[in-house]
View 1 (cartoon, one colour):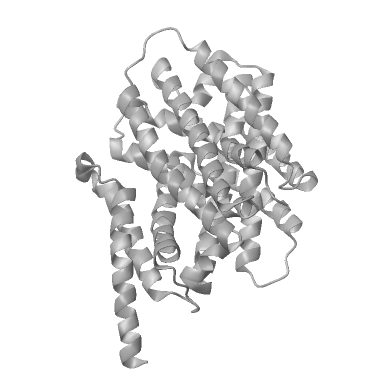
View 2 (tube, one colour):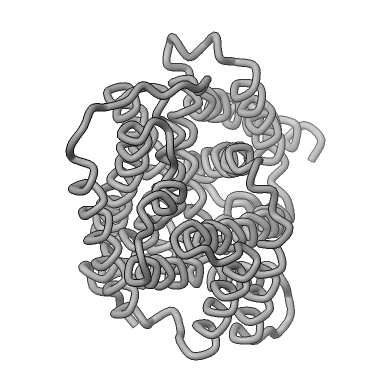
Length: 393
């Protein structure tokens, strides 16, 4: 079934309008309003551009997101990326459940453990009775949560911007802004492959996510600056929001988390050569996500976002360079030059993230540095590999 442009816009706006995005935006507060907004804008331009290109590629190939990488990475490369995608989607399922449960805890005093169970079961029930095409409910959740965030801004309009202490650098903030749209990259094609046309798949996917995600980050930044460093969950706890806002948060969490569970199932079907029923996988991943929510170390939330960037930034730099620029296709089990370039890129990203802060004054963020280096070495290694094949073939 073809997806309407307006629906495609709202699907990705809905993916962005979540408490996780607002929560992440609060990390930017030590930079102040101006630098915080600049890092949000810059990071989202980079991340959402990659994100939308992934959607365009799946539309052109008429293949799900993970399966669309096979022509560049090879069968084993696709399986590896698909496996990592399933892991990060389970992680996101856990994160979304935890953050929603904490909102319940802060606002009405419900224990976080009980909140995790209620939210997790809600996600499971959703997978049993709704499919990925229940777009109208997603659209309602988007509108309701957007209205709620507007009320948050209006409620905090008085008073001064507070100074918030912290050690986040501009470069690190940009990476946190890049990581969120990048986390959706390995699944965006599961939806855009059904777009009306390629131009729409790119424009409406980009616009929906970019606008909504930037706004969510801004809300988190704004709340933190107006409250002296509180994140959105602590803020809800301080004002005792009541039941209605929590129901809106629950609805938006369930619809967004379902997208994670759904694409984990689609990725599994793509990488496993077996007949698996999607409905069974949806139930399995809903339960696994619920269990993971009790185990996920939220103290390492930032590192989780960085880990996502370290994997998918170099992987998709190779994929996009090969598909859009070189226009080549690999028929091997593993594209060795792509694998080597990916490893170098992943190591570069981690080095720049944890040890390369001195480069941030030249705007050499981990993402930018990784894209540049990976894009340079991949065609070089590929050329050398072809020469070796000619000599020894």
